[in-house]
Amino acid sequence: MSEDVGAQLRKGVAEPCILGLLEREPMYGWQLSEQLVGHGMIASIGTLYPILGRLRAQGLVSSFDEASPAGPVRKFYELTDAGRSRLAAFRQQWAPFSATVLQLVGPLDPRKDDSHD
Amino acid sequence: MTDARLPDARLPDARLADAATAYLARLDAALTGVDEGTAAEILAGVREELLGQDAAATGARIRELGDPEFIAAEARGALPGEPAASAPAAAPVSGPSPAAADARPEPAWFAVVAGLLVMLGGVVVPVLGGLAGYVMVWLSTAWTRGQKLIATAVPVVYLAVLCAVAALVMGGQHPPATGATGAAGAGSAEAGAAANPLLPAGYDVLWSGVLLLAVLQLGVGAWLLAAARRTRMRRAG
Image (cartoon, rainbow over all chains, first blue to last red; front, side, top):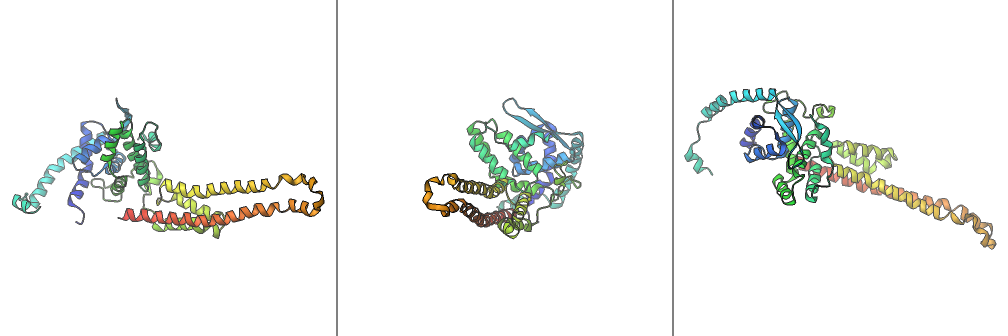
C-alpha cells in the first residue's frame, strides 16, 4: 500500500459516482468535473475524461451535443439503461460492503485521531 | 459517439481570449502521449468551457484548471493499463479507432533512433536516412506536434532559402552572356571565363549549403533528443 489510501479508494468509486451524478440529470464535462473535484473524488478534469471514455465504451453512458443558452454547444453525458442497471447494482453492494469494511477496520477512535495530526 | 466535432477543439477560435488560446495550446502540447481520443475530449471539454467567457471568468477558469502538465499526468494515470475498478472487461477508450487498441507505451529506444537518424541519417544514407528519421519522429509520442513541426520546418525552410540564394547567384551571372561586344580587346579568354565559371559559383553555394545542412541537422537532432529526454523524465516522475 505505497499509494495514498484515499487515492486508491477514490479510484474504486469514481465511476459509480459519475453514474450517480448523471442519473440526476445529463451533465457536461466541466459540470461533472467541478462537482467531482469539489467533493475530492478526482484531482482534475484530466482524470474525468478517461473514465468517461471507459464508461462510454462499456455502453453505460452516452453523449449528445446541445447548445446552452449563454454559451457554445456543449457535449452532454447521460446514463444509458445499462448505466442505470450498473448503478443500481452498485447501490445494492455498497451498503453491505461499507458496513463489512467498517466492521473489520473498526470505528474511528476520536482520541487516537486527535493525537495523530 | 459524436466525435465529428472533436477536431474543431484543436483549432484556435477568434472569439477566444489570448489567455485561453495560449492555455489550450499548452494543454494540447502537454497531452502528447495521451490516447488521442481522450486528449481530444479533454481539449474539447476545456475549450467549450473557456469559449464565450469574459476575460475575468476565463482567467478564473484557467486558475481553476491549473497546470496543463498536471491534467495530462492525471489523464495518463487514469487511462487503461491501470486496474480499472469495476471494469474487468474495459474496452479501449475510443472504440472505433484501431490504433487505440494498441495503447502500449512506446519503447524508449524509438525516440533515440529517430533523433539519431535526424542527426546523422542524411549523412549515412543521403536524403533517405534523414527522411526515415523524420517519419519516425512524426510517429513517435515523445514530442509535441509543435516540436515536430519546428524540427521539420528547420531543414525545409533552410533548403528553400538555400535554393533561392543559389538561383540568385546563378541568375546574376547570366545576363552579360551576349553583351561581350564592348570588351573586344579582351579576346576569347574573357568570353570563356564568362561562360564557364557560372557553374562552380552556383555549385559552391549549393555544396557549402548542403554541408551546412548536415551541421544544422546535428543541432536539430540533438535538440530533439534533449526534448525527448526531458519528456521521458517528466513522465517517469
